[in-house]
Image 1 (spheres, rainbow, N blue to C red):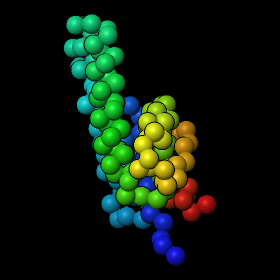
Image 2 (image 1 turned 90 degrees about the horizontal axis):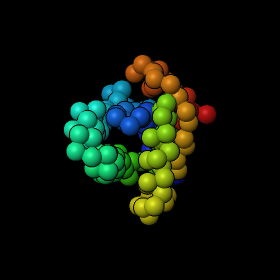
Image 3 (image 1 turned 180 degrees about the vertical axis):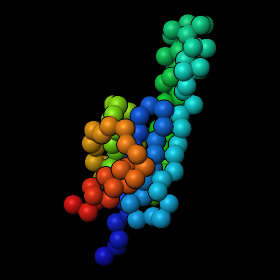
Length: 125
């Protein structure tokens, strides 16, 4: 039987911390390019431009996370915002992700050790 490869991703709209429960390294992060400075700059031009820019940058952020997710069989998405659900809905449209099992849970901001323990506990149960 093939060993299942699992990963946990704590995320909000600005950062995704990828936590492999079996790796020595605690995590690695992917950061969104849509910052408050980008938002302010786009808003000065027009609100419509700001929304378009946000959508494009979120898609790029989600694509980058998706590239990492493809290496795994089971994924835990957790965090305080609805970014985890948005990512899941975005990836569901792509057939590359059809065989990957997603679990989604709400969670507050956590320390690195707490995130690692949360992911480890989730996959051990």
